Length: 178
Image 1: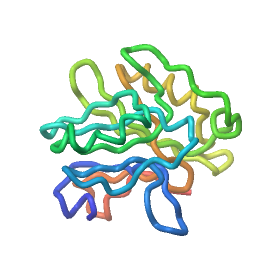
Image 2: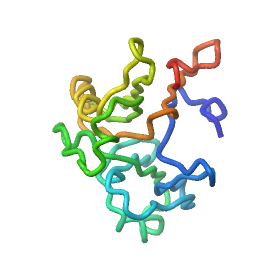
Image 3: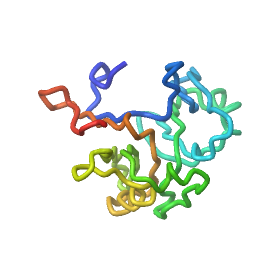
Image 4: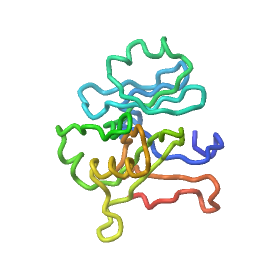
């Protein structure tokens, strides 16, 4: 299903996936159906976008929640990703385990919610020296703080970083994916 098919106003790419198998490597639930579960051992996957009653929010996530989550919350859609960039108005501690992922400037995608309930979908292009350098996770978190985010979550970035807006006549993609 594409963003246009569901009459979305805007869309960004989601969470991490396995290109060979063509599926998510993170917990993904739509209504009562669990589509994928989180690959074991990935410490950066510590947050989730949850949609409840049509309203999205960002929350901390623990893999242990996955086992019974669908039964306890059948009406919620969930996409796990990470790391968390902001929680309750403060920048989060970003796991330092994978320095290349955290400190290297890459294209980035993220979602956040402000105190007024507005949802921010943000992409940062990269891998084009002198044009678009990408961002480290710390600088991406700082950007969300400057935009007034209360809670923010990093989504899959890199070559997947894509932003789409519905009202554009030329296909809607507003960035330059690498």
